[in-house]
Length: 336
Ligand code: EPU
Image 1 (cartoon, rainbow, N blue to C red):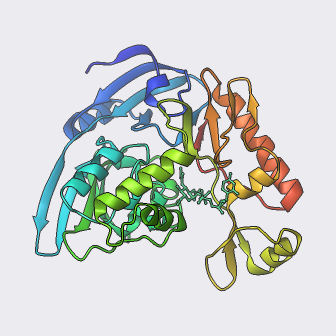
Image 2: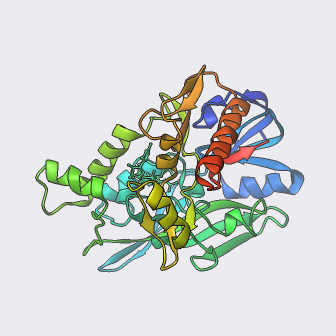
């Protein structure tokens, strides 16, 4: 086994935080992972590194999941069933699907990270959540090295949530994800305002998967920082869900507050709006700050530490609580 020593993790996390892995190994096959787990139980996993904030050097063995490959399990007239290995880059996979006219994930274009981590937080954007295309998740149980298959139901998906953030947390390593995508009669989701505007500006009336993917890419590029240029982890906080009664009192005070209805009694409020309203949008402190175009995104302009960014996040949480009486929940995994 090729274990390396004192490796910087800067290029392995999209926040670009420069911490050291005392020991580091890249794994490109499930059987190698099984062999490794027989001897190493206390491991720290890193895949696309797109949803974590590293605040210190990592003492455990860092295992970089780099298992590649896409296979077509079966297909019929309407659907294709794919198994995609965990180390495939998410956006490249989306583009491959769009090129092959496989529909369902085109709205999730340009999301950073790898396929293996997409079920953990049930990635979602522009009216689509990945859970609606996932058929199964294969994961190695760390304690037994057995490969388990989780059905879509087993995954307990919710908004930015799954079993892998709860009961199964820390117990499994996802090795592949199964998808069912459409080959025809695509269920196009263009309801999200910005997509509709983008398509209209291009005079596209009957959009293809590629048109939607291109629209999403254009919207994301206009609002969200490219992690290759400015370190970030996308939305740092979840959008809070509040009771309808509470929302109505909030709305009296702030008539322009945007909202999405979750159920008869619950309303989701955009955290980005709250943070902007609290005056943090575009604030820069040395090498870190709040993105100028989307207040939900905290950024590293170069050499910020994870601790600095975490302290800013806590300051934001406290301000939002004082101003709006709303607790903002952090979405990114903070590694203490
Ligand atoms: N808003 C502001 N100020 C801001 C940001 C947003 O007022 O700085 C307002 C907007 O004007 C709009 C509302 O908040 O009225 C919603 O904004 P946006 O459409 O940008 O979406 P979001 O709710 O802030 C969520 C996801 C994003 C995803 C977008 C689009 C979460 C936590 N975030 O953001 O996900 O791309 O919707 O679907 O649910 C990510 O997870 O990394 C991510 C970028």
